[in-house]
Image 1 (tube, rainbow, N blue to C red):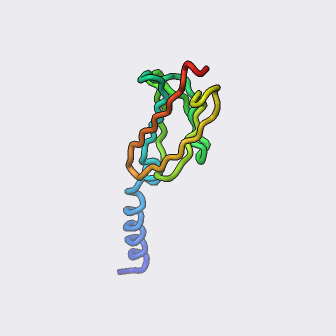
Image 2: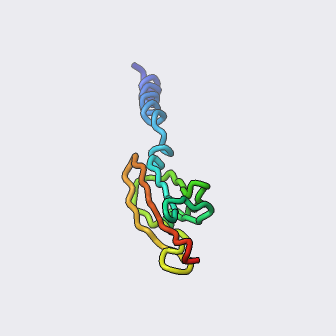
Image 3: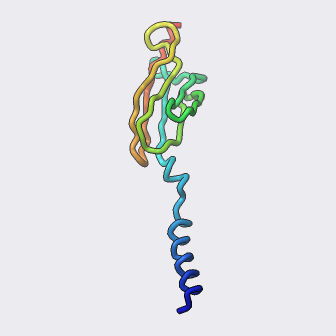
Length: 112
């Protein structure tokens, strides 16, 4: 076998391993659902942020904001009325690979 042919075969084999994987999918294979609610009612238009990644979202009509994230430990920050007037509250979460992690956050409507 000639050196050129051997190099070509080696390159083909290496590419088949690397091209078969999706590095983006493996980095964002977990889902974080943050539900902001009061008395079983989901609250829309609430600001939620994953601090470490600088990613933010607003809750939908169902009171849920969704993030696709890599596995890891994060701080979720939400603007809610947890203990009186509106303020930012931080919630630590740890998400494993492939998980659907649900975080429920109470927003006190009468506290506004």
